[in-house]
Image 1 (tube, helix red, strand yellow):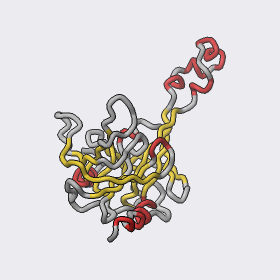
Image 2 (spheres, one colour):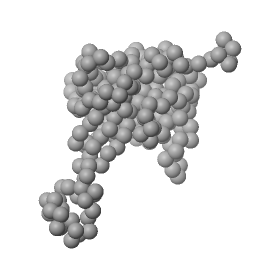
Image 3 (tube, one colour):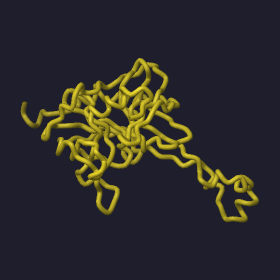
Image 4 (tube, rainbow, N blue to C red):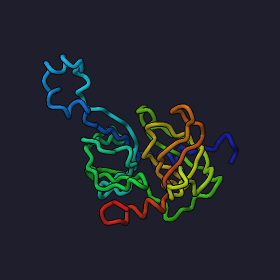
Length: 228
């Protein structure tokens, strides 16, 4: 096919309905202090009313079981959030229940209402090879669903020598908010869950991102309670 006709648009059209935006509300640390619930004490200590509001963070996820409403994301995306909201591509918003986590693998499974959902298939094995083309879909900086592309740069990477987890390295641009979104091969299969970037001196992408591979994802999903 001529280079000017190459496109991943059909693949993205097929997979993107399974990719979700995730918003997580964390209780304000000030709200834990009963004294500060009184406006008088807030004024006395110089704590603005806005500081009592929940803190919000954004991430991504992918529906892996439409019938059960299961969504896969990163553990660090949901953390100790008090409330988790999932927004689908069609703009529907659903509250999510945390089903299980694997902090070591940085994975978490959520459950939403299984109403008119589309799932993305999980690759049967770790088929990724260095040089394979891949697509990342996520919610960088809370902008909404965004598609980037690149290749598999390396496999079996560890963020630290002690991690013991072989990650997929990719140069597909991944930024804050992409965490929890899928890394897709050219078959439209999820080969990894985007989890981290190396960005010396800042938060922007420099072409070194990492994804949890399908084999580890399957291990987590097979465990009885979502934990390793």
